[in-house]
Length: 102
Length: 330
Image 1 (cartoon, rainbow over the protein chains, first blue to last red):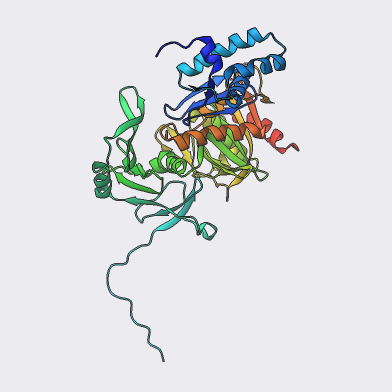
Image 2 (image 1 turned 90 degrees about the vertical axis):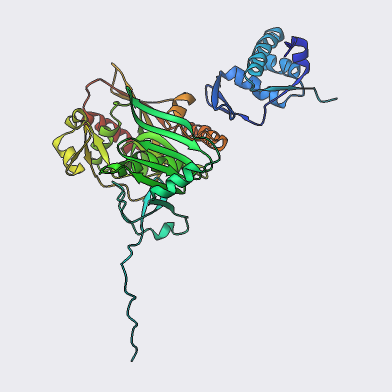
């Protein structure tokens, strides 16, 4: 599979496959792949990003929202979000779909 | 005058007996005695379909050999080169537990039937039922079984989880002297019921190594009744909790140079909770999801505590601390 550019990634909608579920704990979010039986841990910020990604029409949309929430520069959030998305995509924990037409 | 007809001649067929353990109503075939799980009259569970436990080597073989899938190993416990327990899965036959020298037990995929094939001359084969097979059947029927000892005190369940040798069993034993009733010394079946978690009694068995037994006072040992030797342990049959109890607290035992102490864990590590499971063999999506949801439910209770134990600490001292904590108003 060809590597995805960051612009493509930010323009796409991210969703959790049916065989992936996540649950939030106080200091960690656990993502479970029901096909492999593997558990993955996310820190609270990454867990919050995953929640936001699930609800957003595109990945890029969550950047300003999270930047406001955490009081940091959007560029910093964007960079962290891209790293998170790439990590989750590599592990099959999210999948990219075309953005919903506006 | 009425004349009552005579009973037909022929061999007297003994009836199956009913028992309750790990939240299951068991229908146990004559010829099987499950250690620590006595027969009961359980009319309150009459609506629950029973889990059948029976002896039938031929049927076990038939089902296993005609399974759709080639058996796959899902778990193996070894002591060096020696296999102590193997678990294989072959749908739709189910899970085959094999403890060499003891028995093979085929557990149906839905956990409602256990077909046993004891090895000739094995007098202790049925210990495999409360130790492994019934907790697994409970898992297959929707319970989550923790690798923990547990007692009921003041109408709520206190559970103790931790690594092997941490003192789970001796702590439970020492609490029995302080008015607690045993839930289990090794495996506690939990059932989410609405917003509550219910802990079910397992078997009335408590096994202690010599060093663990020696950490109990004479009065604590007296409550346990007479022991019998089983492998390298002393096995007792203390009184079991009469019924299931709502979850009270979970204590995670930790060896520490500091302590002893009890502290509530504000942000419990979910992976610690997940690792507290007794069953790593059942990996269906439904069960995996249930396992994770139980960890969520346990964390949501906010009644998970770290129990620090200093090396060599006796169970009496530890039980006093725990008892004081449990007796304090919440």
